[in-house]
Length: 490
Image (cartoon, rainbow, N blue to C red):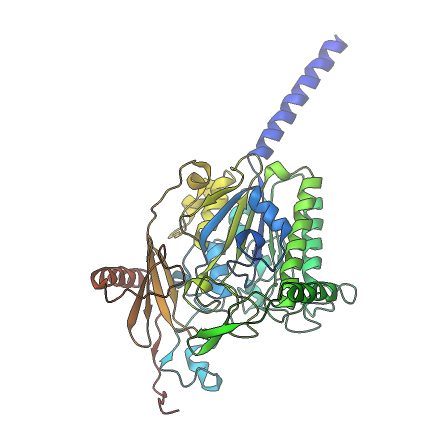
């Protein structure tokens, strides 16, 4: 009798264990790596022959590589807002980096004698928006944030008030601009100083690893949002030396070419920047290793993304985005096309490439759908992003999707001009507000946007411009307006 009872209890226990295990497998963990200012060709697996990124190259091989992934903006805060909400920045009025001057603040700014005043924008991600963290938290996930936030000038809008249970380093700053910057002491109100000389990417990885160890028995959403590779350009001495030596051995030279009124870097040869890229890759590797050691690899979705294109035309111009045109702060491909990786061992096809255009708005619904929580999306109004679940699981890629849009009614610090964009199929139209003229490119034939077809394909250009204007009206997008103090003689 006792034996039968023991067997019965054991069977019941094992049944419960299997049920719990199944529930765990139906709620995979999500680890999101977001890098600041990383260009489309800044990874070895995306074309770089100078920067070394072995951990991310391995992640590419174990998952899906998106060759035409876009940020919703050529600068950071708007893209980050689109990731957090699944919406276009124009719809939520988060169209410029938080801290940029408002229209009535340009008198003391370098844009004071530009033909246009920028559009007004909201320097806080609204607390009324449902964030990606809040969505995961609503279905039982633990939520963690480390690194750059830059989605709230006010402390009441920082990560811990936007759905994250833990916040290690997220505040109003867009870069580590005080303290010892990338090295401890950090002077960060949300990150305790480490030992003197501690390197920030390593510290953020350590905090992420610690969270994973403490929360591996329940589903979690962890976001490691690097301050790297944003300026100030600072890396560890040994990495700088490594790339100085590599530059010499490869006989690389720093080359620049004209881009508007600026000069764009044409070679990847900046040793300090290369060191920052590799240090970021090492930090990613440390987190992936912890997932492996914890036995969570097959139950963890990894996503890797950048918040805008590489910095190539100003502020040190540390990287080249060639064959793409321009870089951060511009609406050309170099400013908005970035590397994207999605990996889930045992679930997604390894080594697959998706060439269909995707955008940062898509990340929100995709992660909730992939994690088995699509019902959360039903409660969110005006979602712009589309789940990519069917694309990543299907053997045949969808070739056509609805048009994608961009709206940046501001002057970029890097030389870009206020404009709006529509991409439909292989065609891309940019409308510039200063001269009220358009540029039209076929990206399949002209990825570098060198051949403006607006005159030879006038009918198509007009059709696309009308669609763009209709979208701007539908989202009630804020627009730049004439600057009454503009003096063209100055």
